[in-house]
Image (cartoon, rainbow, N blue to C red; front, side):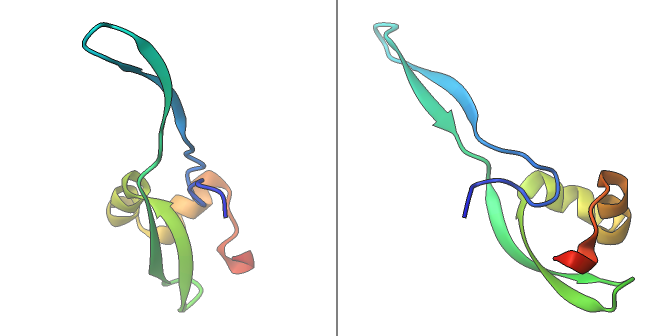
Length: 78
């Protein structure tokens, strides 16, 4: 399974690790993904999602159904 948020689509970011001598090496900054069972009120059921923590905060603020609708994601297919 790829490390991509199922709702927001967040994925790894390419960055540089800079040492004390300023030698730069490539590194990946991974997304903080969590496996969660979230209650979807409109569908009246639990939905199992792999979401980033920033998406979880947005879900707490807006609600799962509203956030998925805003992103154009059909939770019935998940």
